[in-house]
Image 1 (cartoon, helix red, strand yellow):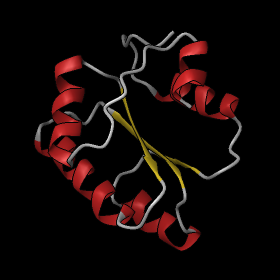
Image 2 (cartoon, helix red, strand yellow; image 1 turned 45 degrees about the vertical axis):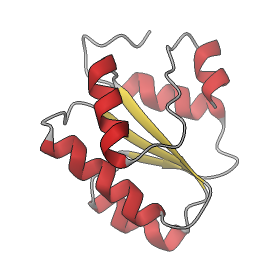
Image 3 (cartoon, rainbow, N blue to C red; image 1 turned 60 degrees about the vertical axis):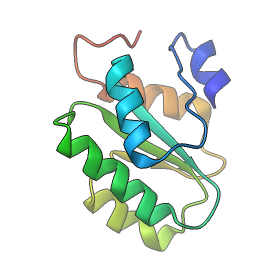
Length: 112
């Protein structure tokens, strides 16, 4: 996904496996418009909710939070209620992700 977003003209910062606090710190320091979390293991509910809490605590509510990967459908309503902007399940077309980002990032951002 990182390469596809780059190919679409977006700057991508890959943070690797980080704590929720580090994810948000990096995002704020770099001035990102979007945090994208890729989930492929258990623990997604806790991780995602903690990232969203850190975003809110740092008053960075203009950062879009999207999630992709293996998310049980039963968990999607709770994640959306917790503040996740969008969830992309396996097989989601890259074009749909790019379009979502372009349509939902606040005006004045760095997204092309």
